[in-house]
Image (cartoon, rainbow, N blue to C red; front, side, top):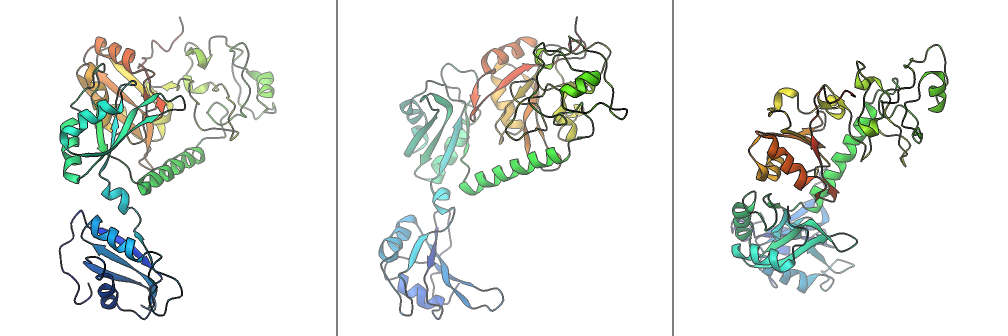
Length: 404
């Protein structure tokens, strides 16, 4: 901190401003004195070149509150030109400051027919609301989630403590999810992580074995649900038959992944997936709504990382669920909270990529009774959460995987 500047301790309500078009000869003390004609300034930090330590013609300014920061912006931005500068000062909130100070919460697990008034009535018990926004689709139907903004951080914290995983809206058996909304920087980072995860999955795909997802040209689906096999089948998939090609058994009418059937005494992973059209040409996993193949009681996607069977406590038969299309930000605790309203949850596990730590957007939930699992399927299968509809189904055992 420059000499003579206010040594006031910074708080969560302090605001960082970025100031551009600053003459390079000005010192931090001179800038602080100039800005204090218009607003209270706690600190000025000139941004300097790392090599030469010379001013780069801009700085960061710390004000004690939004009110004081707004005073500086209103008085100086595009209005005041300092001696030696060719353009007026550029004074604005530093990146991420507006979102940090908005005290904005994300609310999930809302009823589809909920109104802004109902959300306001519930959340205003914890403080003064500045805004309520229910997220809606193209047909103006609620997506089951919303954003709320509080006047102070303390009010937002109280709402999280009072409602997250504890309060159920009328008509629902699952509690609300209430947490801090992502900032723009966090949203971009999450998108980048997801893109890296998809790229890594494609790079790690075994393209030498035509029985794995992504190994075959997309676009061919047998109209009869049969698996094309032998030399004729290879030609149907666009692969030239030859001595070095892997062989497949004859046409098997029961091996239609769309119907969940698999041939008796033949491992699931040895059968080609039904190819699906995709803009990118090929994909490393099955597209929705085709069910993910089951290998050793686990989705095939889990083979590259994430949880292992030992991480998941099984319930009795008929009490164990697969949940697909989970929001990317869901962790084990949030998955358990979303499904604990139907019965006693023995365990909940979201699968993550071992290399990147990014969620694969599916997981397991096990109850202590089959009745609880049935209730969860009835209520949550097709429930829209985070822009996608959840897919909830019973975990199949080896016997159920065999055709009868």
